[in-house]
Length: 291
Length: 190
Image 1: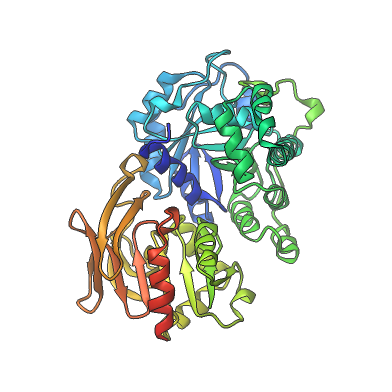
Image 2 (image 1 turned 45 degrees about the horizontal axis):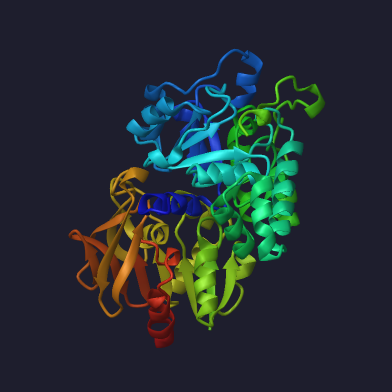
């Protein structure tokens, strides 16, 4: 699996570190995101909050709409396909997308199998709630991981939970005796080689971003202080009162996530944040899709 | 030797790890206060050039860094860093630090499917494993800019006095010869 293309794909994720990837639905929004300092955009027809509100089946976006966004910006363009829907992924590869998000935000197409991502040249990012999910996706060929969080809610609790869980499991693996790693691999249901990597390097073999529920500069900085290497912001920006200002503030908060004075300034006067949905009020837990 | 590493976005930790390994002290530059110290060199890493360019201005780093480079502060710019150093960007009216008289093209090999690896000779350094990630290339450079390497007839490495600009990512390999050259030759000249 460790071929040259996979290496280059992991390295693109490394270049995105310390940056903010923003959901956009139109070329105009993509330009606003780029001007605000997004390091990449996620092209989709409806942002997660609207997907949640609309209900029904949610699918890959129209390739024409994605191409419109590709020609509007110079930064990388990502797009989502349904979990297990390898033909949607083939279509996204055909239009030379920079990254495919095999995403629980869309309706899953397969409730057993994820896409064999090693069969593709374009890179994949996948969501995970814990180390086991992350390493399973990596063994399937994902070259970047993000927390699942709970998309479209503006509630950070799940992303925090997933990041903390990941960190504590990595710490646990790192402190094990090497003869304990086989059992760890068995209970995590992942290849022992990946467990060995985590044991030796005290980190995932790929970049790990935070996603799902980030709505404010403080949320973004919280995830960075918890160890995220960058942040996805979905509904948080274009569902808020002043997208341009909020987007730029979140970008700066991710760069200077430890600077409380700057964070205080960035949090001022941002207008209305997206209307959130509390964890208890959610009927559909997207994070439970795909394990 | 103390090297500043622009740490507003991108693969700056990779540079720091190599520089520390070679015995240099690294300081991260994220805001203007971080520039209020003596530096023996500065690294502009790979990442997204639009993001770094914007943050250079908004975090008030731009003037200080530009002036210091013009006054001889040694600089290593890789990929996005090379774009920041070019005084012309193909098809665009803007440039960033603009301290090297050369014209560069963003995403010159296309999207991620166009990313590739190559091994090529660099003048004064030797054969080097190059990683090109959505890379730019240098279309042309002024006669006094020294061309160090080309890949398929495209310029990928130049030296201009105190400035070293590469369109690939030496921070992604375990060959430290470019960082050694930066520390031992360029930073030691001043």
